[in-house]
Length: 282
Ligand SMILES: [Ca+2]
Image (cartoon, rainbow, N blue to C red):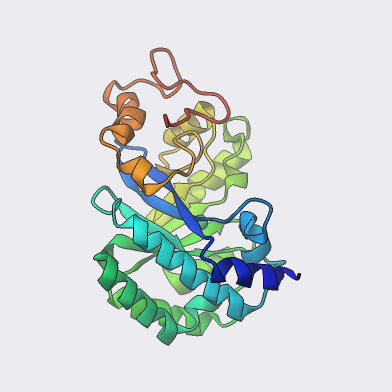
């Protein structure tokens, strides 16, 4: 069976679920929102989203759009539980966005049935895929923005024309790729790049989210560089919406660092550092 056929089978049988990873405000330890991440069965093409959505994707645009629609539906279905606590960050493939009419009716129907207002949704556009028609895409984003949606440029720094995308798409959030965050405490170059992007984002009216934060050293360095937001295993692995809505869980994980003014992972920190970070309690 080809990858395409396998994905169609999985879609047909509804084998898609969503996990959510928190995005944290580094100024006060609060929750900015949650990124919805597709989860498929192990050892299937859906267990490696990079195979499906990445630049070397083995499936057609039509199937990607069907998959996107299923992922968006799954994200909003359980994501409504999280919206009182923060915004919902949803990954949408560029080729799906380019089908505005399909997208708009999909979103409108889903938002109506889930009760989530568009103002609470941030659409993440990956930098890993080149926009085939940036002008058309930027027109579409303007239409969706008028409805209340906001946008994040995902994986910034990884691949295609990042600076041009900033000009065309005017994203409210810029998510800096994990490659620039990994070991940032040991690299003056990474620090200069990340600080530069954060300043640039601010001047353009957006905000930076550092992705893939895994250690307390990385977190401390980002905080010293005044990076406003971050996400990664250090704060928590992707979990179900139900997990994150459990009373007090989020506060127990993040707040003590900031309330006590203690260095994350430093002496007296309840949550310790180290690669992999604090593991949320199941
Ligand atoms: Ca993303």
